[in-house]
Every structure is written in C-alpha cells, then in structure tokens.
Image 1 (tube, helix red, strand yellow):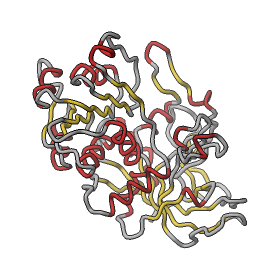
Image 2 (cartoon, one colour):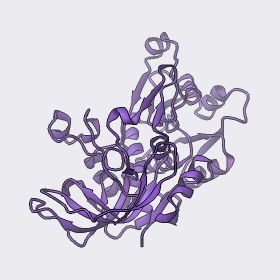
Image 3 (spheres, one colour):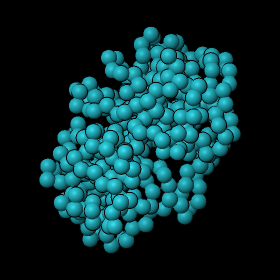
Image 4 (tube, helix red, strand yellow):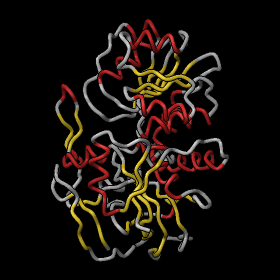
Length: 352
C-alpha cells in the first residue's frame, strides 16, 4: 500500500510504501476511495494545540507516535475482514466512523464513543486515510452511504457529525429566536445547512471573509455578518438577531469569537464551541448566573450521530457542502491551501 505519512512534526507528509495490512479479529480492511482534509490535521501536523495561557497540548503526550498517516474523514471499499468480523460488507463502499473509543467504558457501552476518555481515533492515534488502505477495528464503525455522492458525503465523518452533535446541544431554537454560526469554513457552512435542515428558521452566519459569507447565504443563512467590517460586532449581531440570540455554535474557537458569541447572547442563551483554533476563554463570571448562560464544549460525534446525520441527508433537506476533489498525491498542497485560507467548503482527496 502507499501511504502519505507525517514523519516529523512541522514537516510535510512523506510518501512511503508499506506492506498491505492484514485484518485481524473483528477488523476490516478498507481500500480508501476518498479522504477529507480537516483543519485539525493542521494542528496534528504541527504537533500541538494552542492552550493559550496554559501553554500547548502536544499530541505526542496523548500517544500519537510517528510515522503516522493522518486523515480521519475516510470513505472506501471494504476489501477484507478478520475471522471475527461478522457480516462485514465485503465489496461495499462505506463511510468510516473514525472516533473509536476504548470499547470498555460506560460511554462506549452507551454508544457515545466520542465521550470516551481513552479514544483512539483513526487518523490521529491509529493510521488514517491519507493512504490507499486503512484498518477499521469493527464493522459497526462502517456507515452505509449507498446512492450518495462520494465526495459530498465524505466530510460528514467529521465536519458534518461534529456540527450535527453541536447543534443538538444548541437547540431548540424557537421561530422567533436566532442561532448564530461563527465561522464560514467547512464546519460553519455544514452547520448552516444542517441547522436549516433541522428546522431552525433564523440562522446568522458570522465570518470575516465576504466570499465565504456569500457561500453561507447559498447554504441557507438568512442573515450574514462580517464581524471585521463593523465598529461593534456584538451590537451588530444582537441587532441581526433582533435581541433574541438564544444559540451560538462557534466553529472557530478563538478568544475573539468566544467573546463575541457570549457577549451577544440573550438571557438563557447557549454557547457551544467545537472549533480548535486555540487560546484562552475569558468571561465575566457574573454573566453566567445573571444571564443564566450555558457554555458547553462538543467533541465530534458518535456512530449513532453519524447514522442519524446520513438519514437526514437522505431526506434531501441538507444542502450539499461545496467540495473540491484532488488526487491523494496532492495532500501537502491541500493542507497548505487550507492553512492559507484558500479553501471554501471542504477539500476531498481521491484515489480513484
């Protein structure tokens, strides 16, 4: 098999030839057909996440060992299975749920692998989809996407299920209330489309890039705000929400977006952050009790969430995220373009 591996933190991926993996036990072997390029891969390539005043979270301390094939939005054909992989869908093209838990804790038994404290995700702590083949621990992590566009459906494994899970935490939003989605990148655009499909009537997209905000309009945002073009972004957001901003999903996750979202919320508002840009959250403590605010983090989603999301996509209510295909061999160029802000929607690497 061919693999594009991170060999040294901070350096480009390197093309390497490896022996074809042989599935053991309940494992299945997937021939990768598509792999999405996620912003978190930039942090992984760098080797750390910015914790602001608390320094850095180094992924090597969490157990990431190099060389490692990144890539956690994986779709491909099941080509082999271990002896205990009952009913493995050999020959079928499936979307892979990459957020693998320990399988033993209460959260895993409840079907909430994304809440497991000892996760070992594909493309992060086990080899991922920047390769021609990937091992998946069990057939239960395969999701049927037959009949759907392969490149459009691939990002749902991360950007889609992440914001779907976050939106469930931010809802309900009544018809006379508003939901703000901060950030109009891959996560934010998916969040706009899903919020509309989930019945939110008033969705405001916030970004600092007019081109991305225009796409957010196309995805279903009924109002947009370039927070870099106004003197008082908080007042402008509150005005757009007509004083009824009850939910914010922050797909950026930096001090400025957190401050904006929290300051603009109405009483009883919910701020849900999924973005990993980094930094330190600072908020006046009296805001929390006096305005009865909720601050909540949300991390990716479960296999159950992903199946719910794909079922929603099949209804035709979800507007497809703009996607651009590139060959797997251009993985480094794709990551560089993403880091430079030259990507609208999602990049998907193809091996076909």
